[in-house]
Length: 460
Image (cartoon, rainbow, N blue to C red; front, side, top):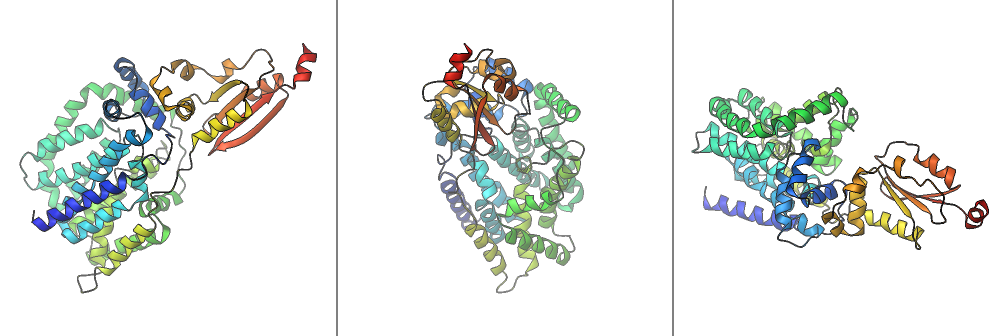
């Protein structure tokens, strides 16, 4: 690689790292983060047992567990691995675009990735999606190296792919996307046999986890998921998420169409990006009518392909004249202007804890439903609680723990949106005639059930 290109890559890496490390502690642990943190702190035996019912393989949990041994137990520090993984994505992405369309287009692709709010969100989560993105992009680069006879590329792909499928089950979908590329892109057809060898190595390495994978896949297909079949507009909404704003999404989709027409769909980079981004997007959308799985985070492995496709299309659509770089510069500027890394999340579990404290300053009984929200509630009270054994709370259900007798102290119920409709509210209303409620956080309600003291004493 020329010195100029190497310097560009190093600069892009440093910029990404600096950006991704900003505001790491701005938001509280929320959504699925407390789950990851809690289980990463459990003894190894409990952790391995949990994977039998978990929808994510073990690699990121092991990474979080190992990292937490050496850093302060705080949200910002626990998110550092995700931030670093997200920053490193620009390395294989730059190399893949550069070898196909040159360093200028590679810079555009990496800047589109850098200024993506979508990717920035995953860079600030204690979850495996940033690692998944890095490994998926690296697999694509190694596939290209395999096709062009690079030494040890087979082994590098096998190692990266193995790490990827041990990070997320949908890593297998990325490998399926690679197979389509090998069959559909002339520049990759020579890679079929060595690529199959690399996949064979990955499959052998995955045999110890195959039973868990089969069980989890079978459960999702037979019993369904918590998702619903998507609406048609979700396809555009996903492009919007990848593009920060509607105007950018429309501009990039237009460039993609124009580039396809101008190149007669023969451009290698254009085909790579189209298959990488749109086959998972459209495929997962179609499958979701039978087994719902269409979710923004589940398509994180396809998003770098959209950056590749967008940058290549801007280059192809507007030719090679003196001003040909202006459209790409304007799109990058639009991404930068709509990039809002400082914007707080809509989740703030501490507001729920504060509301509970306001409503029961002298003590009360608190129930949290569903049980999965127990970890979020605990982390908002004190993150160190996630180091403790909370299994009694996680195994409790509000239907079996509502009070059998009335008491002068209020009963508080914290209900997250995912909680199904149950009989708990009616049971408590029969004991406590008065109920106050408030939405304390995004889709999280707090209920206070009280029995007026004077009535309580008269009833006894």
